[in-house]
Image 1 (cartoon, rainbow, N blue to C red):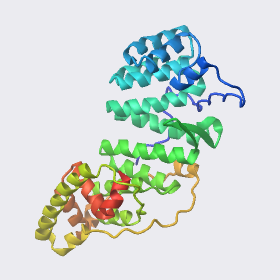
Image 2 (image 1 turned 30 degrees about the horizontal axis):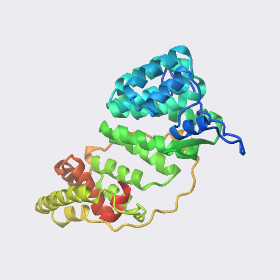
Image 3 (image 1 turned 30 degrees about the vertical axis):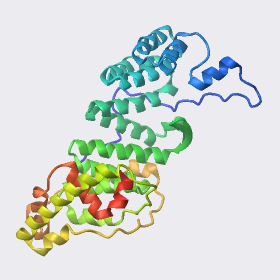
Length: 352
């Protein structure tokens, strides 16, 4: 039986989304000083936080900016922004562990509205440091907040920012993102059963090529080659906007393809055409129409029992799959080759 993914870990408090900065009234012209601050994206004034931002963005001296952010926090000047900015600068300076400890020790000084943003920064820091247990625990906590209706300040959408642009994110989109990240983290721990469950929950909310491919890998890692093939057949092809790192990926693809040829020869010697067919190239079809699913229903789903196979009921085909699995190289090149062979090289590049 899998542990309940959505129980809130002890020590966490409900979080709310960070508010947006008020827009400047239309028709009000900016002074020369204001234009400078807008150009450099620094606030106006001469407070500890403003001085830290000037050193970070205008002087471009991140190491000097870090103690200035500390000073702003200690003086109580815009603590929410100062802590978030300091953690980001620390990460950029390869001081991710320090950033984690800073957030943990100082987040109690921040408002409820800042907690969700701090959680997102922590997730990135945990991933950077390879702290999978902490990353998984926090992802489950955030999913628990969605289940309880506490995410996004109880609203259905929130305004997010990426590369200077604002866009709306729904609770469903956030849930699928978190479930996908949870699946990835569990895969890094070789916990393919729980990773499979996370990806299936995400796909029940919304179809996604990348998550379907990762689900296929989870199935292959469990020796369920036939299921993996059937899953990958349903991946919807996408049109490429242009090549993305074609040279480097082609080299990895060529090496992995040679590995596939060697494996096919070995499997022919072991099991004849049956083994070859199990690894055959699959033609890609479109995803089946998926009806909208309530995110709460997915999160609250009880269908997360560990699959148990009786030794007496394992078929000869399953045994062959297990033999094949034991001969598969456990590296990224092989996984890349499997997906490229299944999807076609042009489609696979789009998913990277």
